Amino acid sequence: MKIALVSDWFVPRLGGIELQMRDLALALRERGHEVRVICGVPGEAQVDGIPVERLPGPRLPGFGIAFTPAVFAALRAAIDAGGDEVVHVHCGNVAPIAHHAVQHCIHRGIPAVATFHSVLKYYDLPLMALNALHGYARSAVRFSAVSTVAGAALRPLLGDRAVTAIPNGIDLAWWRRPGDFASSSSR
Image (cartoon, rainbow, N blue to C red; front, top):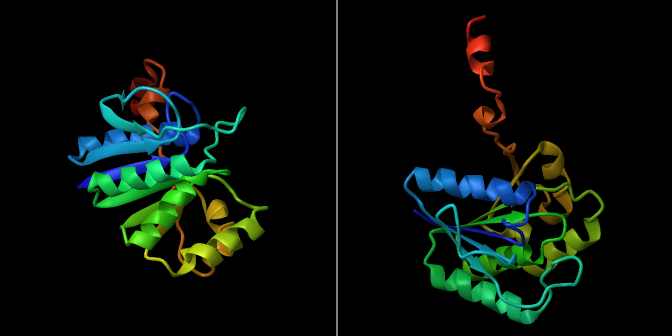
């Protein structure tokens, strides 16, 4: 399956969304999927063998957030040209690229999943406005969040739509010290 992962953020910037997306891309590729990342962060055209399309254009100084029509035009063009079977959008607290990708998928009928990585507890008015303008609650987009708390905070955006809670996964082997596994398995 051809899959595009889209977010405002990606490596080399480091944080939860960035690393979760990289690990997801690698896991999907290991399962035989063709994966690419579309993001708003400058950097290399490949990360760990995953192709990365870096959206051109100015960013809000000090924050790195996209805000110009040219960035959103480049995003739409990247999604339309990719031939992806599904677009998986990763949203954080302030995520204009991610939300624009969701909106583009809604309006073009592109199969999409949107995962919310942050608790948007005090964003009720902006979320209600996004739903009124773009129809998130009526769309075919599948919604998930990294916790039930993050999912519940999406009610102003999604109404009674189901939000699947999918906790972030971790690689336990990466966190083990040498010898930990052997000593715990002999008990």
